[in-house]
Length: 349
Image 1: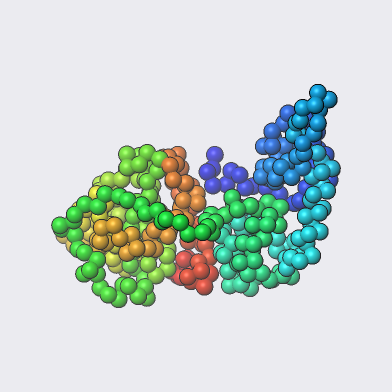
Image 2: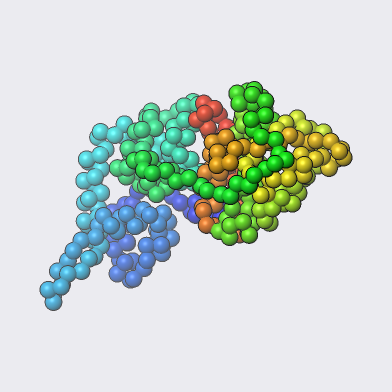
């Protein structure tokens, strides 16, 4: 079963009708759960859950005790009242085509609200209504959409609190070349071919399967490979495969790679040494300062996108190579604000 698409194909982005609310009331009396009702009605589970919460009222029993029960009449009346209160003042109005597009992009395609609006403007997609990112966030906060809540957003804006910083062991690298010696022009991100590399660990930490992630600094192109373990030998094997794949073009595609001081990257000669031309360097590797993830900022941002599909604590061994490839494809075709909502694939072309 696919980890990426198993919940999206069945979704229908339509509001509940009055008749469907009566069906919900009957099914609840039959002890059906919200998940079962969603399947029966062909709706998203959260749509059913929101409706049950909206239409649930406290009722007095004959023995003078109280129970909470869903009432279709109450649910439908509140729905109509909400529509009257919200509908007239909304810019999106009756632009159902735009609403469906937004719901598909956020729920099915996992876009952020900003990426949705940015793509519409960058590609010149035509709808009756034009809204900005802030307005879209406000609509989601107010539950204007039938199928979108804040839970569907990859990153919800919150008030700033104490920041969390990832802590990993940084070993002192005596042989590798420091980022301080990396050519200064690489900072400008004007030349393609300069990469950042990191490992994304799963639920079993360093002992289980991990992802090797390479991010190209100019385009933000991503290369993601599943490895059996977070070790130097696994990293070398993947770089060897890339060198065989690209052959003579390898040195053009990979001019430099910047890594942190994790144990899987410490042997620079193994990472740099060519397997095709013995004794020659295939790519120059530079090492960031310990505890300075900002020196690989593109890599870190890319890893956050991966977490939309593989949450922290998830066992990466459960994901197939095909599913990992699908995540890589999604990332390379995702509209990026920093590129004027062009994709990494477009920027790398």
